[in-house]
Image (cartoon, rainbow, N blue to C red; front, side, top):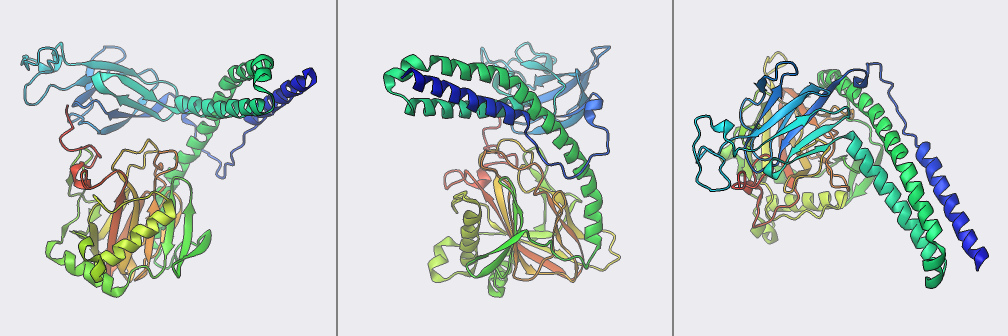
Length: 487
């Protein structure tokens, strides 16, 4: 028995040593060599302030020399809103709750709603301080009661290394448990388990540092890629002879050829041939015709507004699911797209509570049009690389009913994917990973200027976490439940 226990211990040490070796030799291929200075050679850091407090807040920069407060937010941040800015390491900000609009105060104790001469200085209006650290990807979460939680590259690396070590710990423990009797395990593997703990304590800091170092390299490449995407967008939109990006591979879905243009866990782009029939397109356009209006975009504060970045006409079309058994054409194509999306993603999206099918129309007015119909680069969902917000969009299906003669391509500039619309075909893309986080601008896309001809599309944005009791329009454009903006 002693020999068997020694073998177990030696095997355990060998396994943990192998893990340490692997953790120190992790390699991630870098395909583009950055030739721009890393921001780690300076103190500049981009940060995001995310208001999740349930209250309205405002953000002030504190001058390092004079302590003067400089208001940064032009309007109060509502619950669910994110404010992005560039700052520097060790700069400090004051986050302050804005008094209730109804009472003029922030009196939580008595509930009297005392009105102060200077409400923002009310002693019961909560505030908090935030200091920029040296790490990347800093997201400052303002939580209930003005508690502050910082998420950054260091915390991500800590989480990743802890997860790796925990999995290895459990694997080794199971191996020990199955390799010896219960009594022997209880008495003879204490040293082996202690060795695991010692290994974890030793490896965790090194593994965390290694992961963050690799993350910094990736971030430098990401910044370069985003810079290159600007010129790529202009060049590809201007090249009317540029074909659709060649697929990495193809497959067949219900006798339809599918080109896989991007296939990642958190971001997929497919091109599906012959997805929508002419009579189905006609049915969608007929239903949309009475309510066509100028298209709007989210305003960043929970609503929407007209914006020069998007020039088109649109109208929502309610899907008549009650007529599906009667052969309704809108219901038929909608059922097909839901089945395709669920087959492609495994999200298990249901039809209840979803947005209307959207008819969007762009019109060309000639090659010299100074302000053509178009939609500049944007995301349909979050695309910030953070945890998915319940009831948000996770996938999009764009079905091409009319294709223009010149212009109108769908561009995914951050991944180098270019889709030339063809009547009857469709472009699908999803943007939620299996880890519960959304993609980081990989599916950001545009509609290139439509110059000659017409582009008519039927678009379905698909959400996760909506149902009959909580439909899509019970949430604002920040995915915050309407009525719960302030508790």
